[in-house]
Image (cartoon, rainbow, N blue to C red; front, side, top):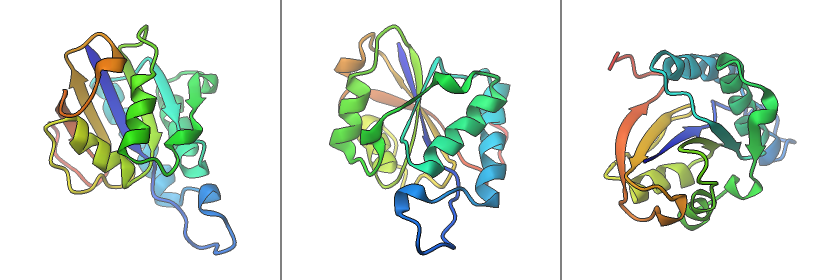
Amino acid sequence: MKHLLLVRHGKSEWGNAHLADFDRPLNPRGHRNAPEMAARLLQKDQVPQLLVSSPALRAITTARHFIQVWKKSPDQIREETSIYEANVKTLLKVINNFDNKYDYIAIFGHNPGFTDVVNYLSDANIPNIPTCGTVLIEFSVDDWATISHHTGKLLEFDYPKNLSDD
């Protein structure tokens, strides 16, 4: 059994037109939401074994907030360049290449790729994963390489403005 947690980066800053998209930082709301969402997962004992992040500033900063709440070392975040601006095919390749010694992995990245891959992999019909939204998918397989179209089951979809306590 494999579990994949997809985390869209927190709300980013658009105020500096001179910054490249890759270098956009989190805004104050992004810095607040990331620890809150990490705490929600910690409360449910849903802390992954491995974190893989886009190296874009807003994604890696989101991952660092999560790792801090989970009291893990920052060196437990692996950067994966191909997650930045990735489409479904690219994200699936990243997932299929995960090491099978891990049963629960989190990836931190971007839309529209994350929303598209969630709907591709699972029975979800999510129109948009909001910033700092989290999606947990379960796969009844033992090998990441066998994950493909509709092989996953959506377990949870949460985001900062979701106030329900399920």
